[in-house]
Amino acid sequence: MSAVFAIANLTLREAVRRRFVYAGVLVSALLMLLAVIPFHPHRADFFTEDEIKTLTGQMIETFGAHIAEFFAFLFAVALSAGTISNEIERGVLAVILPKPISRFSVYIGKWLGINLFVLLFLFVWVCLLQLSAYLHVQHTMPNLWRAYFIMALYPLVFSSLTFFFSSFTSSLMSIVTPLIVVSVAWTEDMLKMFGYMFNVNTLKIAARVVVYVAPLNPMSRWLEKALDPQLWLSLQRMRGSFGPKDPPANWIDLGWILGYGLVVLIAGAVIFQKRDI
Image (cartoon, rainbow, N blue to C red; front, top):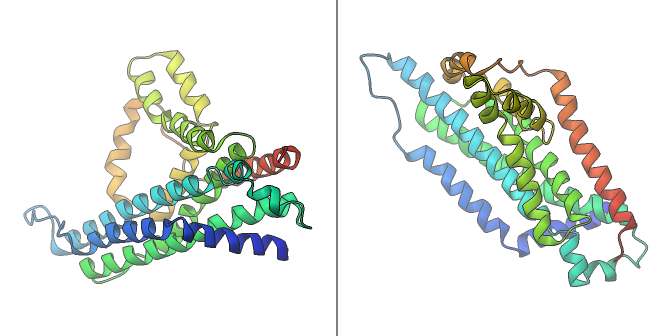
């Protein structure tokens, strides 16, 4: 385990050396804008003062959480891409691996270091969202702390997927391929909408298949459950005409998310064990 933590520490330092801290600070500045931008609803004829505060808090909570999880996902993919393949191409691993450090320790240590870096910034971003909420509505949003653990699944799962591709492809392909996989999974709602709107069976089947490419849909359901966004209830009612509604977040979904991340992480580690350095 000491070797794993040593590699994780080196990976954290490498992320700092690659100036990703500046990117994290830039995202933090973006989230701080939520604290100063006046986006309160002003239709007092439709809302009471308490309803305006509630709506404002939900807007900060929901939009802010989606911004934070998107950048956590993006950082995880960007940092993980090429972590294995790029260091093989540069000859770094050829120096490290002859030492008494197993390939598994190197692989897991790098994965751990990257996720520690991303999750630390994710924690900072949630704190900034809480500050924004307090400045606008004079109270924090407890649901955001529950949502933090769901948002953390995005970097954990998609860094595992990126590591998997990094274990046998070039550094360029290791960043492009996970983005393609995520894009395919993201099309589920669109395929379902057009499939049921125009009654195209091929699109309906495709919508049922692409959900298994990456667990984006169950992750979104769990994030919505954690946030409990009353703001979107009316939008959810409108989806009835675009095919069957998604089931509520459940423990099977969570098992699928964690299982997916664990399988691709282990598969990547097995491939890395057999790759020529």
